[in-house]
Length: 241
Image (cartoon, rainbow, N blue to C red):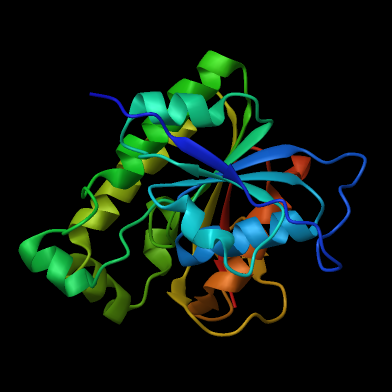
């Protein structure tokens, strides 16, 4: 039985809350409590957009972040996603499994379905069509599709031995996005780290990277920039530090 996502405004005005800009857009971040998702929410708020953060425990973002609406809901539930998508101008998807990858490979995920990326993204696409939204940005992974040919041997082994199931689901996710008929952009970061925020990422449309690591904070900022950039429509962007 479907459960209704709950919303809670955290629009607490203080001297650190940015002023909404005249061309602000209403943007939904799906998977907002992960590292990249949280960073995207923060960057979108700083840029003056109207932001909704969607996840099973979106209200946990309240600490340290002001100026967004928390929407508790399950990306695997089409009704939850449909209600969350309604009324927005664009959607950013940062779904993933925040569990030890070795444990996930051997025992399966404990809290999140293995197909959360593809199934959740499919629900987002369906909801966007239902509500007339067009702009979709999805965080994928470097090594999917054409960028697989650029992987180092150690990365190929890691993907094959440790995160094979997760990468397979990400491949399905990318196929869904490309076939969605929406104005989409895929963002493929290299290995994610919890390093402090730094300079803007190196972004390439041809699979080039400068390093094989990038901070989640930098990826989140990149996602927030890409969602309003018309020059990267129907592009796959490699993102590195």
